[in-house]
Every structure is written in structure tokens, then in C-alpha cells.
Image (cartoon, rainbow, N blue to C red):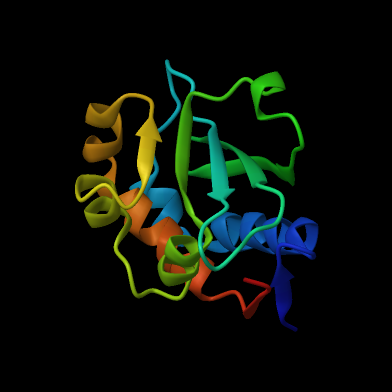
Length: 143
């Protein structure tokens, strides 16, 4: 079943949590992530030339190779996140479709990261696996 972003973001993020938790590869690559530091993420889909709607904020609680919670939030400042990953809707589409590497997207400025870049680099394989798992979700885009 396909999920439309952003209107079905709740269902999309639920499916993403399931995929993360079913993945042995993610479990191994993410081992140690969030242990002794806040590894939770806000994924911020921003307005751009392809999308003029409301910003979308997806929040995931990830720790030690597991996704403990995942949901859409209207109040990112009210969440206790350790990292925020922000980019325009078209860039998110490219990322989810597997056409853009998350690490390259951070390095070339396509995405902005708030948080400890050194930690993200240390767990770069986990970031790549997370993106690959997002690509496995049948997604339709409303932007």
C-alpha cells in the first residue's frame, strides 16, 4: 500500500518505524547510537518550489539500533530531540526515492543538520541503512 506525503505522514512514519525495527542490518549499524547521548531525530520537510504547504515534522526516538517511537509532531520545539535533519520537499523526495545519499546531502548543503556532526559521521552506515529502508516504503508525493 502506498502512503502519500504529507497527508498520510502518520501512516508513513508508522511503517518506517516497523521497517527500522524489522531490519537486522539497521540493528547492527545503529548499535550504540543514542547510548549516553540523545540520538532522537526531527526530520523536517520544508517548503520549497515544489511544495508550498505546511512544514512536516517527523519525530523518531532511536537508540541502540532500535526505533522506540515514531510520530508526526506539530511542535518540534516541544520535542526533546538531539538531532534535526532539514531540507526542502523535493530533496526529501530524492532522498526517500534513493536518488540522494544522506551523507552527501549534508556535506553539499542540500540538507541542514542540527546536532553533533561527528556522531552522525561515526554512524554513517546507520544513516545510509535508514535511508534505504525509507526507500522501501511505497510513497506517493503531494509535492
